[in-house]
Image 1 (tube, rainbow, N blue to C red):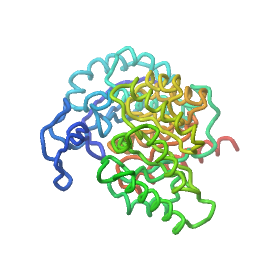
Image 2 (image 1 turned 135 degrees about the vertical axis):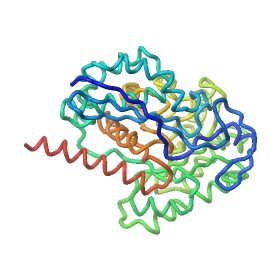
Image 3 (image 1 turned 60 degrees about the horizontal axis):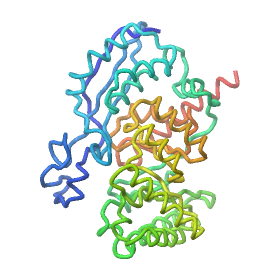
Image 4 (image 1 turned 90 degrees about the vertical axis):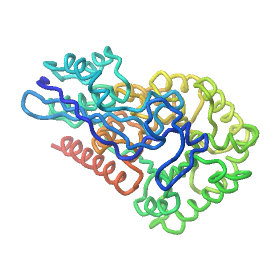
Length: 409
């Protein structure tokens, strides 16, 4: 199957892009907006609607393969590329992408990904183009995208769902019930992005919140064997509250006790100013936790943006779980290789993403997680819980049903 035409079309993401530096510097909140000066290059305002680059590959038989590239919510921070401006991306990259792909036969996703890498596309653009290439390969071979990924990367065909993590956004209380009702595997993310308002002196506010999550699960779960992981993303705030990594570790150990009998994962408890600093901080914190015999699992996020970053965190043994934030990683080929590298290193691979994504990128990310055998998948797009869980789970169950039906015929 050959590509006969390439169409690049501006689109919209599901949530907003936020200038993280400006927010951290004290931008004033006014309803959904933030007021104050922009501090990160590429932003027009501190909070702006996310843009998307829609990539359409028209195949010779008339089918249309689709991908959607986006920037993550906090684009431009912690070593990430600048926020995506779709029209600028089309003007700069439309002709090179068309020249590379028109007339090409899409029988191998990995082969086309290797050719695409020669363009050195921005990662948000590469994310969208690689999705379309994976979709085209699957359409041309009459397979699901998960089957293409599994077979091209030497994995067994998926037979079970990947556990999902839902994120609550700023609805930190109400969303818990939505997640428990739907029996989400990991919850609630928490968006713990303000040390004063959400962690508090000595971690009191965060401990109260984690306890509320735990108690609500016990109160409202429909069956005793629903035992989700409590996953809290702390955006480095624990490092702001506590004076040392030993103090952070001691607090996390107490937090795990408060969450019992549910396991606790804590994402980005402390923040470094560079990749080496971030790796060092997480590595030392992990050693402090080990000395306490603590069951807390640490999840790396900031500065773990690219495939090379993933390898650096793995080589250092800096975390129990690595978030492979797919729009930041860029090409889905790099995501697949990153998941495999995690598995080989004995580290859990979390196929992350962003609230800014589209329904297309959410569906395709689900296939990549299935085909690579990831340990966790972020439910996306948006922050509404129900919608993201619906999109992710339905795509997963449909795909597994198709694969399962073929194995019995």
